[in-house]
Length: 208
Image 1 (cartoon, rainbow, N blue to C red):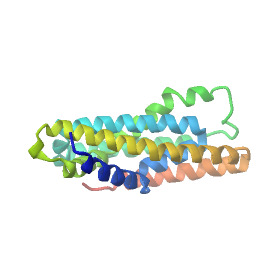
Image 2 (tube, rainbow, N blue to C red):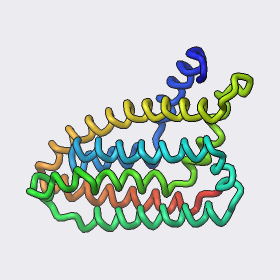
Image 3 (cartoon, rainbow, N blue to C red):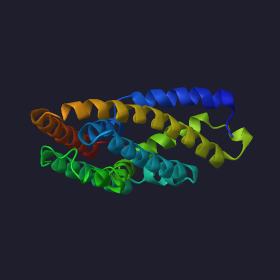
């Protein structure tokens, strides 16, 4: 297990990285504003589940294969871009006044959780980032490298939960106030759709 003098700086860096604007925290912000705090927190759990998978992949060495395979990277990023386009389409066609309807618990349950999982797992840059970032804090002399990577991944997930959970809460509160206005709700839906399309284009054009 990494020593405390390694874990504490790592936690601080992980929090700063989670605060930096990126597809995942923007996704949390928009989903929370559109569907409420509970939905946003559920999305955060889905995103963190994806991080568990990425951590495991790095720990067992499969991430290096993905990083070296242009085909695997391309397939994954295209899948992610298509999913973002699908989310944009849903945002553009979302009916005004949807929040508060009887189907809200469904949208804040399994559906939102899997949105977070798919969003995270279809971004190949996350696993490549983990492959480049986590090993920098591993001390091979202590042995159990895979265990050290898993612990570091867990700490990163904790940082993500703290930061993204805060984003979901604040965005959900202010989003709920804005959603009382049909005009504001329509504007948020179109803004979200536009952002999703921009993220899709960015991901589709990304390089390893």
